Length: 138
Image (cartoon, rainbow, N blue to C red; front, top):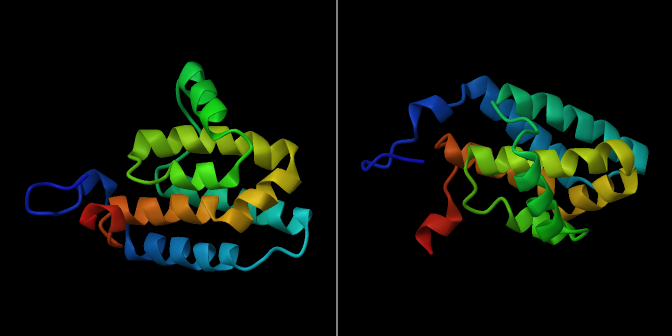
């Protein structure tokens, strides 16, 4: 998602306000939730804020179902799905995770504890050129 000079794609750039809002939410998500309800509230905030960064649950239903089957109930697989993901892949992942937030707060809390929403935020910041991509150096 960068050009040959290593600059981020201009369509993926985030403002400083957006960057700070995402980083602040990521920090809050890193703290253990005191209950499923508290985690679900943070999840709703996550989806509202990530929408401002041009991400939203979307994609072809077949691709969503395929990714859902690949990830299964394992939160670590959701985290792994963010590695090297582009915007379209992140949107698919958000489409897979959103029902877990709306129908199963305990599953969402497990995703938060494993770092799935935080990984989405980190990847979005990487795509914007605001944080380094560790997999680019491996």
